[in-house]
Image 1: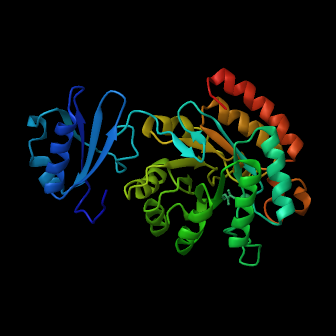
Image 2: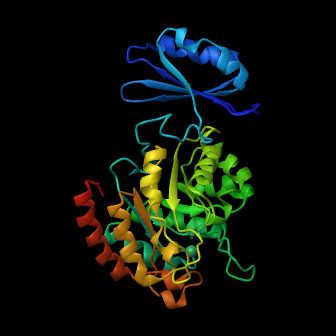
Image 3: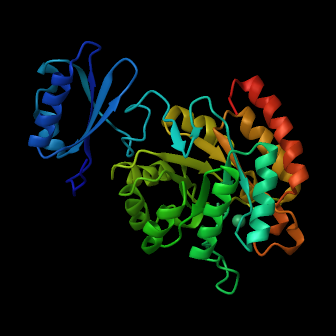
Length: 348
Ligand code: PEP
Ligand code: MN
């Protein structure tokens, strides 16, 4: 898959018929490439869809529907193309290590906000693992509002996370803040997170699109759903299709929470996009006592998982202590999640 500068955003979705052969598909792709367009193929359960991006004038004049195997060719009117449901009707399921995120799976992701010491990380990892979390969170690079706050342990933190992964058999997610650190973070992490402040850092997104580790894209705290899906498109169109979205609250007039969890985004995204979406009840509410109710709401909305800050001694945490829940609170919450997931037909 290639990417190059396109004139305009000419885009077509070419739906192949149920009986289309590999050769029919190949002919369409060759024709697109000969027209200087980019072709992205999505092989669904019953039919193949070929998304095309290219010069609108050329794409519109070629007789697609006369080609063997083609059922229909329709322009994509939305600004985001390949991440839309129009392009792929089946849910995307992303593998994070051996954990599936998307479809009917509900992923429990938990751990400390930041890696502070080896002991602190291992205590939290051990606790969330024994309670049933499947993916560990913990950051080595922290984007902080104040330049004087703790910025993370860097590569040393990533090494500790890799040791915790080996010890507990849990893949881990960690944030990348700087495009220059993408290769470093990708060499350790199983899932690379883009934080709210970097959602519109298009250079960073394109870099992440060119490497092969899955990406967890948090919503910008002032971004609309459409802007967020456009950000996901930046990653997807570079060739990395393993993108998970994370609703983490938006800035509103409300001050009783850190940000307002936009739970509507979960069903809205289920209509607009095939990508999985998880919820962060810790960074949205910003308060420990809100984590359990917001998690329960996320399961009921059929999110594909939650990511929760857990710290054994929140009062000493270097980052976000006010929202971290205790290991015992996390275990109790797991019970609620198991029960609700059963009701919603989600697998843990
Ligand atoms: C985080 O998950 O640790 C984080 C910094 O979140 P956000 O980017 O959503 O503030
Ligand atoms: Mn945090």
